[in-house]
Image (cartoon, rainbow, N blue to C red; front, side, top):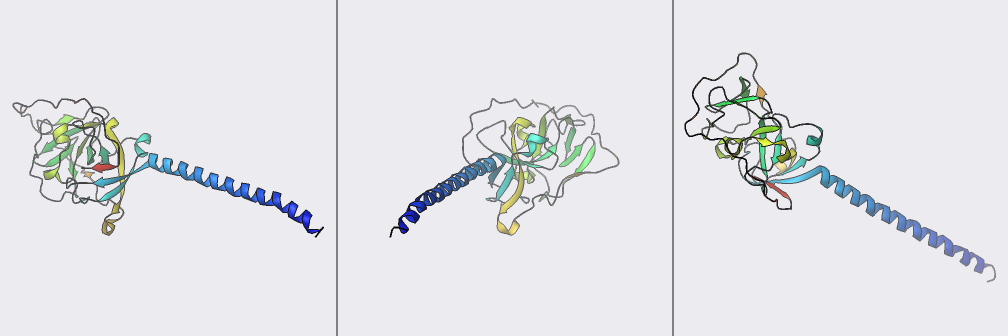
Length: 235
C-alpha cells in the first residue's frame, strides 16, 4: 500500500494536463470553425432564383452559389450572370446577364444586339425576342455609348425581364456578385455557362441616322433606399 500512493499522486498532474490539452484543442476547433464560417460568408452567397427572367439558363426556384470576391479583383465580363441591386429598388436583388461593358457602343435593333457595330450571337435565348426589342435610346441611330463604370444587363428571357432596357445601365457599385454554379435542381447541378454570348467578326453595322424617338426622356437616377438584410432572392 505504501508503494501505490506515490503512483496515484503522480497520476493527478497527468490527468490535469490531458484535460487542459483537450480543452485547448476544443477551443482551437471552435475558433477555426468561426473563422471558416465568416470567411465563407464573405466569399460566397447562396442565391434563390425567383421567376423566369433568366429562363432557360436558370430555373424558377433554383439555387445558385454566387462568388462575391471576383469583382474585388476585376470588373464584370460580357456573359457574366450577376447579382445586382436595380436603381429602382435597393431592397431587391435581380439576376441578369452582362451584355455591354463601359465605353462600348450598344445598338439594339429588332431584337438583335450590336456591340461597336458587331452582332452579338446569343445562343441561350429561349424564344424569339418580340417584347421591347427596340428600346430607346439604344435603338436610335447607331445606338449609345455605355457610361464609365456602368454595365448594360438583360435577362435571357427577354420577353419576361425587367432590366437595363427599363432602368438603364447599372453602376459597378450595385453589383454584388457573380453567379458561380447551380446547386438546385440536382438534375441541372453544376455549370451555368455552357452557352455564352460571342461577338461576330467581319463587317459592322452602324445603324442609321434616324432622329431620336419623339417623347423619349433619359431614365432618371433614383436615390438608393435602405436594403433589407437576409439571404438573397434574385428575380
